[in-house]
Image 1 (cartoon, each protein chain N blue to C red):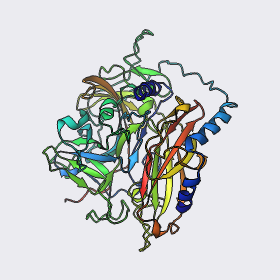
Image 2 (tube, each protein chain N blue to C red):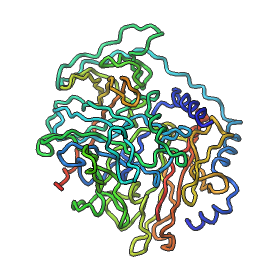
Image 3 (spheres, each protein chain N blue to C red):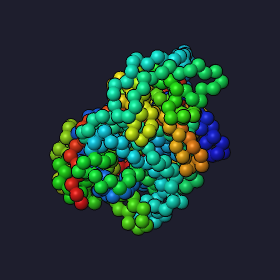
Image 4 (cartoon, rainbow over the protein chains, first blue to last red):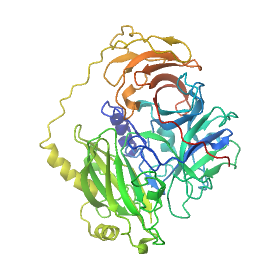
Length: 377
Length: 161
């Protein structure tokens, strides 16, 4: 039955209705719709050495990313390419790879590669100065990456337990002095880089990205997030943390990456608020059904709604999922306050809440589950 | 709020999908079917020659007439018109899929990069291209559709570790 549903989903996803994609990012601000003020630096995963800049997608934190009815499906990679000298072409590649079984980072062996595309280059330019290209490197709707991800999936989470999406960077001794490709990044509080802008999270939060190195056993986690992520056709949901005592965002608002995943409600002194943000380029004025649950639930597929509702609930069924309201997207985004700052009790520390939504495109009567995200209180 | 959520979680009688099912059923009974016809796939002539950039600069040319059966070398633009795919790409995804949340900007020329790749230059300074790449997951060459929009000037370079 699962394979039948997946094939049908592929047919749906190949239809012209799905005319755009959404980048699934993990960064304090939404680079597609917000002015990015939180960037700490532009940097490379391992300075001027060859390395893969890898975003970690861990099912302990996110599930249902690009869920095509049980088949995780990616359509390309989005990233901001910072170039120290635009007039010289930069060469890079795209990589999607599995994690080590032990859960200790990316598996850098060739057999763990779900996808490798090499030899991509930046656009032409006569500008000899520093600059940025916002790169949309698309595989195409009918050519998405699916089967390798499915083959490595854990049926209880409908994805590989932990996998990595990234950019491969060749060694470049000219970086950063005169030339070279780097990425926008937001540093963690404990990165030790002196960054005044960047991520904001509670103490002890794990590092979200990796420097993938070819030699076995030498890859290392990096203390920052990147403007980098895979394209999906499902809508996205991110939880933001709202810490009014912090200026690391560089602007008012919530931090939709580390602060949402690892908020501080300890009361010593922070008691962060929570905000849910739903985004979708495919149904920019879609109707949104908000929900939550205590912890992730086993994936639930509502067969009565096939093929109109795509994806799975990770909130469970009606016995565990809690409807939290109905709203609508406005130009592709909507933020909903879950809890104001200083309202969550420190007694909730250690609790995991999960949030997920449905976005319904009323123009084509097609609805999709967003990804689900946990909040580790 | 979170405490309430947990309490309601135990007592909830409706799941999200059930809520949506009821809502959708009631709406679908009254919502008109979409009557939007797909945009005609006409050919848009280029606006003019490209500005000088790196490499060779060529004026964008109107594509040769194609039979209705073979559109494998045509790139569908967000406005519904088509242009030839670049770099001998076959079956490239429509440009709209990867144009992003930017206003559409027409093609004004073709530029060849130092790497020998042809790119469409757009009026707003964006570039787009198609190219064949080796797909390790498919075990064959496949087309990519790529877009590059100008972004903000990069922030400070990271300090050495």
